Each structure stands twice: as structure tokens, then as C-alpha cells.
Length: 429
Ligand code: EPZ
Image (tube, rainbow, N blue to C red; front, side, top):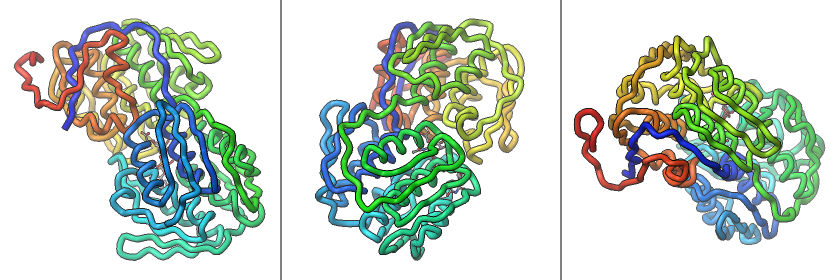
């Protein structure tokens, strides 16, 4: 059980490069199963979830090699379409294997995906969509068996613009016979990135980023030229929040500001000073922070649910009452009791959190329950008086590459430990 030990109260400052996007790299890794050949993927951070996806690919016979931030994937060795259950249950994105395996081999055998405990996460939209493409799917004893000698293009109207279902169906339809339209598709930047990658493999896809994506199936795909994965907008948003909550001044490099418009808008509303340039963002936290009357998370281009915990932690320091409504996941306030332990005043009623501030945060022993909740607790620790111990660093490592080093390079007093440090009264270790 690794933890972060943080001594708060430092104003962060400096320049930081934003690493590649976990939620873009994961479906792209799954898409390598769609073609025979060698793939070179650049700007792929060494994260636990990326390692898990690589392990699954290797269990299917594919070779994966890391060289710094580059992954070389040799998909010529694919020899199985049965995903080991133990690997499947480690993360939600393992479900992305279903579309490509079905399209490439005519069959896929998987368990149910695991992943962050942020609410109920069914896969009905994935299964319904694949059935519409002609797959025959049997579910028995925790196993999903899908078969389709060749998928057939059709129109799929999604009940909800699910990111994962849109990506899975894009990959499946790329090798289907005929044309597929995905209506009410997700519009996240990661969807556009997947379209870019698949089209570089010879697919014929258009409309990513809009509500309707059209995929003209092709007979065969091939590896593209070396592909550089987009920067991680949620990592960028987390760093932006860190500058704001510590009254710091940070410059984010290698970032795509258009991917963060709703996040930038929200932080500007609180008084944070944010300057945007084509591939960089300068942020300065300015007290007093203003409360946000009411903000709801929603699919892109709305405010991302993956930034809700970080914004909530910051708003504990704002003057007045803020209201945050979580509309995407039904169990994504598990960071709240931990923040309350540190002195925050937050009341949750089903999907709504009411945050009264500012309240003085004092260091405490808190536990990360999922990736973004963990990041929010680290931010609170950076702003708190005294020492905070954030247990469960493993959750944070799923989506942030060595977060403690990133913050330490910006002046934070933060270390990672495998010990179980004892916390004395008033936040001393
Ligand atoms: C992706 O998850 C991201 N993960 C999540 O990021 C992110 O929170 C989410 O999109 C929303 O933006 C990856 O890209 C790997 P969804 P995904 O399908 O695909 C319901 C992080 O912190 N739904 O858009 O699982 C579902 O229950 C992670 O990096 C169904 O009902 O999200 C949820 O309420 C956490 N049936 C809503 O849709 C389905 O078949 C959104 O889920 C699929 C989804």
C-alpha cells in the first residue's frame, strides 16, 4: 500500500509538460488488434492501466515493448481471442478488446470489465450495438461469448453518448461489410483521436466530434506511420487546479487548450487567471476564490466528470456556496468524506454536492478510492496546513505518471512511501 505524504502550504510554480492521454492510448492499443503488423505509438505514458492493457495484448499473443514514452506493438503474433478474466477485471477499458477481436477474428470471449468504483457501469450499449452489427452474443456464468463471421454495417442509435461504446463500435464497424452510422455518439477528443488513428490505418470514418459518426467498412487495415498520442486533458486540468488551489503560477506545455474549454471557463469563473496559447496554458491562482453558483458535469463539450473531484476540492477554499451536480456517474462523490475529514464543509444529496467555503483544511490520513478522487485528495493536501497522508497511491498511478515527481518539480513538499507513516495531532508526522 503506497501512500503520498504531503506537507501543504507551498505556492506551486514553474513549467510542466503534460504527458500523453491515458483515455486516448487505451482504445488505440486495442485497435492494434485490427491489423497484422508493427505499430509504433509515441507519447504513451507509463501508467498502470497502460501496463494492464499491454499485458492483455501479450496474453493474446501480441508483443509489446516500451522504449521510454514509445510503445512498439507487434500484432502479427495474435493467436487467441480469449481475454483472461483476471486481466479483464483490472480495468474498465478491457471491454475495448471486444470490438477489434470480433472484427478481426470473428469471435471474442471475455469476462466483465472492472475499473474505478465510481458508480454502476453496465456494458449494455456496447453489447446492443455489436448485436445490431450482427454479432451473436451469449452471456453465461460471468463470460461473454460473441461471434460474427463478418459484421454488417447498420445504423446504431445510442441511448446515451457513451465514450466506451462509441469507441468499441467504431473499431468493430471499421472492418464490417457496408456503412455504419453511430447516432448520438460521444464527442470527446479521444473519439476524434481514435478516428485519426483508424483512418491512418486505412479506415474510412468521418464525423468524430459530432453526434453522428459514419464508418464505411473496409476489407483490410494496416499499421499507420508512427503515431503520436494527444496530450492528456484531464492531467492538464488537474495541474491547472493545483495552481489555482495553491495560489500558484504554472505554465502547462504540450497541451491542447480546445480540449479544456469547459474546464478553463469554470476556473476563470472562480477568479483564476488563465492565459491560453496554441500549445500552452499559463495559470495563476488568485485569492479570494469565487464560489460557483451551480455547475453540472456532462459529456463533452460540457464540464468533464473526470475533473469534478479536483474542482470540488478547490471549491472548498472558495468564498460562498458552490453547487456541483454529477450527471454522468451515480457514485462519484467518494472523495467527499475524505475532504470532510480534512475540515471541508460539503453536503451530498444523491447527485448534488453543496460546498460551503472557505474552510481551513488541516492535514489528515485520507484514502484514495479511485483515480480522480485520489488526485483531488492530493490537491487538498497541497493546500492544507500540516501533513496529509494519501493512502492508495495505486489508484492515482493508473492515470498519472509519477504525480509526486511532477508536483515536487513545481516546488511541492510531497514524497511517496511504502511505510505507514504515523500522523501526530495537528498534522505532524
Ligand atoms: C470513459 O469511461 C473514460 N474512461 C472515463 O474516465 C470517463 O469518466 C468516461 O468516459 C466519461 O467521460 C476511458 O476512456 C478509459 P461512458 P466509459 O461509457 O467509457 C453509462 C478516468 O478517470 N453507460 O461514457 O466507461 C455509464 O454507466 C475514467 O480516466 C451505460 O449505461 O464511460 C455512465 O453512467 C473514469 N451503458 C455513462 O454511461 C453502457 O454500455 C458514461 O459512461 C456504457 C455506459
